[in-house]
Length: 330
Ligand code: UDP
Image 1 (tube, protein in one colour):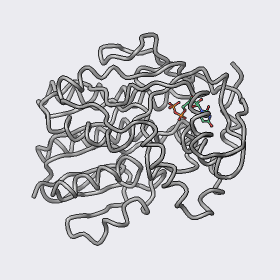
Image 2 (tube, rainbow, N blue to C red; image 1 turned 180 degrees about the vertical axis):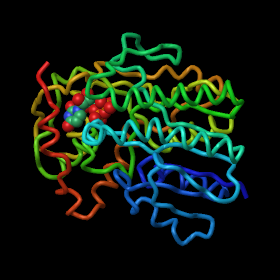
Image 3 (cartoon, protein in one colour; image 1 turned 135 degrees about the horizontal axis):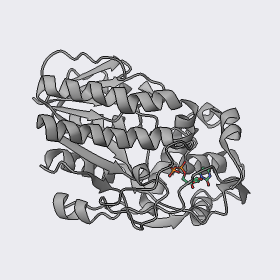
Image 4 (tube, protein in one colour; image 1 turned 30 degrees about the horizontal axis):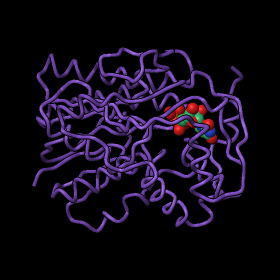
């Protein structure tokens, strides 16, 4: 049985990756410090003999006994509200954390994959975004802590690949959604659905003309799995190119939920990217991958998941004061 270490295993993506690797017959070593992750996402795996969990901060030295075939470094806050609230931890998990993971990969002779992001393109001036585009990031802006940590991670991973010959993979993940997102993580989809469920108006930031392209989590996990098994060491975009404005997205959520609430407009956060759409030519050619789940199907599944949560989840307000602190007028 092959053995995989997944950091950030109790998070949204990490937990879906745990499920996938268990289903593929792997032993899974799951690690998370539970700052933004939640054990509820992986508690169904605890009874399995082939699943182990360690509550550990990967920006500190990592020890794993026994062999490892793969390491997936997915630990990091991923919602703008989260990484604004904990900027230093975000930088540390992206820098010290990847250094520890790379050292472990060398020691175990394991193949390592990092979760990179469309944020490496910043507020992109090239559209759609191809992997060759170097990006447009403000290093000292509020999002810089995440964007630069991820850019450093890519550089560090590439250096271990070229200098040490380590087997590495870099996936650039675009906006992803699905069950196990935190209802109160501040990202647009849980924010809108949470508002609809609580009978509040939907808060569109700016005039709603900014765009995003949303990928359903199962499609993303398939792309990640294929990339890990491929022999391609350069970055690959994995996302759904079906682009939509945030204003239209709010209307879709209003229709989906049947809420009679309306859209209200709030100030746009600083450095909020104006457009984002992955060019997935590489993923198509190298991995034979493209997304299969339409936004209407994926949103329906996600809405059903949020509706099934206990009522108190709906009213858990995180980072409220902080949100007010970071929002600035354009
Ligand atoms: N957004 C919004 N209302 C919200 C939360 C987010 O209009 O309640 C906007 C946000 O300004 C951004 C887009 O939705 O333009 C996506 O934001 P999210 O935080 O989900 O992720 P991002 O893609 O910016 O990292």
